[in-house]
Image (cartoon, rainbow, N blue to C red; front, side):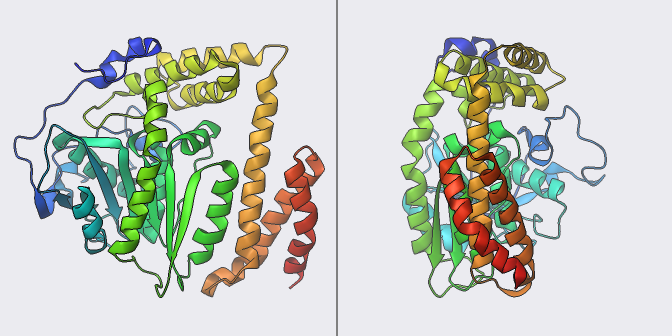
Amino acid sequence: MRVRVVVPVLALVAGLFLIPARSAQQVKGFQAKVKVGGPTRIDWTFAVANKSLDKTPANWLPGDYDSAKQQYDLFVPPTYNAKQSYPVVVFINAGDGPAGWPQWEPACKQHGIIFASPYGAGNNVDLKKRVRIVLDVLDDIRRNYNTDPDRTYTSGFSGGGRIAGHIAFSLPEYFGGTVPVCATGDFRDETWMQHRMIDRLSVALVTGESDFNRGECERYKTLWMTELGVRTKVWVVPKLGHGVPGGATLGEVFAWLEEGLPKRRELAKKYPAMHVLGDTAPSRADLAGAILAEGKQRLQAKETVYPGLMMLLGCAIRWGDLPAGAEAAKLVKEYDAKTEKPWDEEHNDFERRNALGRARGLDAYASGPLAGEYAKQRPAMAKAALELYGRLLQDGKYAKGVEEAKKRIPEMEKLLKQ
């Protein structure tokens, strides 16, 4: 048994750090069509639902789905040494086969990155199966190699980029960031997951100068995340359309992702449940207990009571069938019964920032150039931004939002009349 960080409140989840046996044969260099050894131990059901399920519903995957039949292309640095941990990039293609290696190769060789790209996880595959394949591949790498969750990144092209963002936003404890290329990915609706995204992830949005998804990447999601406080940056690659840029750009992106590493590690020291170490496979009960413990730890400091309560609420919903979920629900109920609840206003402030960020993003998206079918969506974008601005103006408690609303509402109304 190994515990990397000792924190008293996590004594109850010592099982979180049990070390599984590694494969006797570790591939080095590049190898195509590596077979997955077994089903993922990662909580993949939460990435496609609002709860962590003990049993996967029968209709979620094809009846003949077999993790051991999944394959992926793999690169492991020739200098790999199991005594140290390594960064990982998992790249999801829009098509049926693997992709991204020619573009990521220079950075992987320069920085010693383990690279993987699955087969059969393209846009024509159902979301649940697609997520499961990606996480079967990621966990296979975690079983066999010494990986660092603070330096593990999803990436992908177009629809694969959306899946890359979706998975990282859903399971941030396994990732340090994400690099969607020519797409983004939807955030989680849960407040505590949005807080997790802000605390933990670096989001690099890469698009081409003439990419038809440029507006989504450069204007919509970037402005939204920036207002929320997510560490994010956009790259608009000259002379690139809807495609994956070359190694120079991705090397720059990787260097930027790594600049966020000190913060991720510092937070994980304070809150160990912030990441799941690369050589561990927590059970549902282990992970639920760790999140419960972090939520309770946050309740001990005035400035973190609000995010702590959001974590406990998330724990209660995600693991409602487990003792940790029941205890979390009880604590939330106790705090909700208090006469004075300053965290309510903190929540309102967060929601106001969220509304302004989305309004600004939609505004910029609708106001700028739109390609092809997206041009038909301009009125809907303007209407959504107008509604958000209207709420902020009516609420009147967020000066920045009120000022922006007064300035932009007339412009959105003009767009709706066009």
